[in-house]
Structures are given as structure tokens and as C-alpha cells.
Length: 68
Image (cartoon, rainbow, N blue to C red; front, side):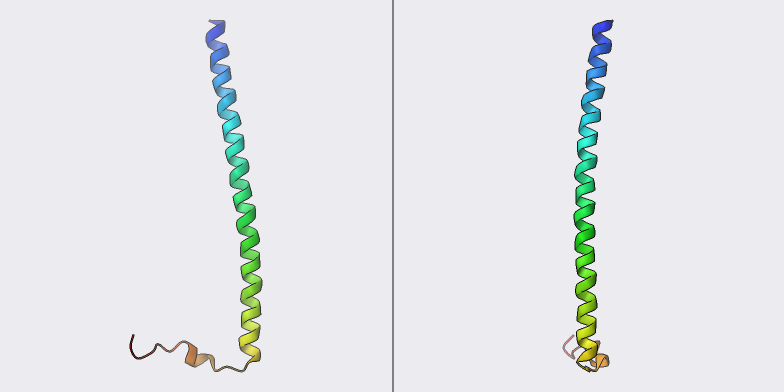
């Protein structure tokens, strides 16, 4: 009986370690994506600023070309 309990505990410890590793990997993915999102927001703000400072008529930008 003791051997069975030790085996079950070992299996639980392995699963726990696997889950810890998976959570850490997923956390790193979220951190990387947040950094990308922040970078994209800054780029978008810069592009908006460039368009506004160029005095481009933005109404023409949304028009679809006749061949569409």
C-alpha cells in the first residue's frame, strides 16, 4: 500500500511541475504580446500624427476604387 501511495504522489508531483512550467510559458507569451501591443499603439499614434500634420483629406482615403 505504501508503494502505491508513493507512486500516486510522484505522479501528482510530475503533473504539478508540468503545470507550473506551462503556466510560466503562457505568462511569457502574454508578456511578449503586451510588449507588441504597446509598440503597435505607439506606431499607430505616430501614424495618426503624421497623417494629421500632412493635411491629407481623410475623406478620400475611405473611398473604394471603382474596380472594387
